[in-house]
Length: 84
Image (cartoon, rainbow, N blue to C red):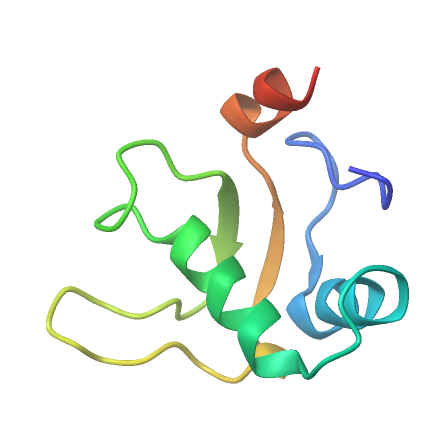
């Protein structure tokens, strides 16, 4: 939300979001931050996804998500409601 990634905003590269998380909140490696972001974008993991993921965020069949440099993300309207 601090980055302005509202539901109506243009999505940004996931690597940029993860970099922001590492720089400000969790300086212990990027894989845990990206894995959490991927789970929040999967409609088969959460009933109401919190991240609007653009690109390959995995599948029910066990396929993994693409590398963060290939995906983009922004908040969903429900995530904005939770944060307000």
